[in-house]
Image 1 (cartoon, one colour):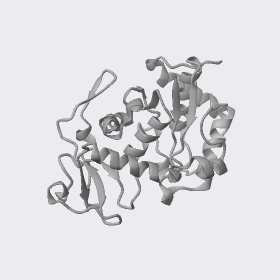
Image 2: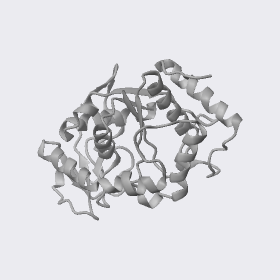
Image 3: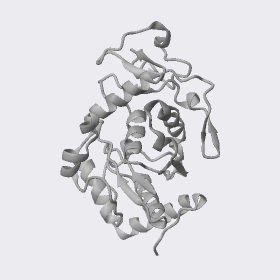
Length: 275
C-alpha cells in the first residue's frame, strides 16, 4: 500500500487537514504501507513560507512520519515542488488531448462563470471554437452531462457539480484535477484518503485517468471520510479561518484531533493504531 497526505499551502492547516493526515497515517500503519507527502505548491499567489513550514510543524506535532516526499521547505523547493514538474504536466496534457480528451478554450472569468459549467460555460465557448491563448483563455474539459463514474460503491455524475472543469489555467499553469492525477500516478499511490467533499473531484479525476495514461490512479482505492466542521456546521477551510492563526499545538488540541479522526474514520474501518 502507498497512500499520501497532499495539503495545499494556501493557509495554515486546520483541524480537518490534521484529521486527514492522521487517517492517512493510521491506514498506512495498519497495512504496513508507505506514506508520501505531496505538497501542492502550484498556487504561487497564495503561497507563503509560513504555510509551508506549518505543514511540517503539524506533522511533527502529531508524530506523523512519511517515507516519500520533502523533509522541509528547502527540500520541497529544490527537489519536490510542483513547479519543477511543469514539463511533466504539459506532456500529460498533450497525451490526453492526443488520446481524445474533449477540451475547449474558454475566455470566461470566474465572475462570469458562477457555478458549475454544466453543459458548457456561461459564454458558450464550447461551441465558439476559441483559440487557446495563455493569459487569455483556460482549457476546459467538455464533460458530457450524462457521464456517470463509479467510485467504490457510489455512482457519481461529476457534471452536476463540476461541469466542464478547467484542466489548464488561464495563467498557463496546470489545474488541480490534472496535477492530482499525474502526481498520484507517478507516486504509484494505491489508496487515496480524502474528505467526502472531494467525491466529485475523484469522479472527475477517474474520468481523466485513461486519457492521461494514469492506470495506477484508475486502479486505486478511495476512502472518502466525513468532514470536520465548524460549530455552525460549515466546512472548515484554510482560506476562511476566522483567526488566520496556526492550530494551537497543545495536548488538549492533539487529543481533540485524535478523537475527531477516530470518529470520522470509524465508518471506513480506519482507526487509531496506538492509545
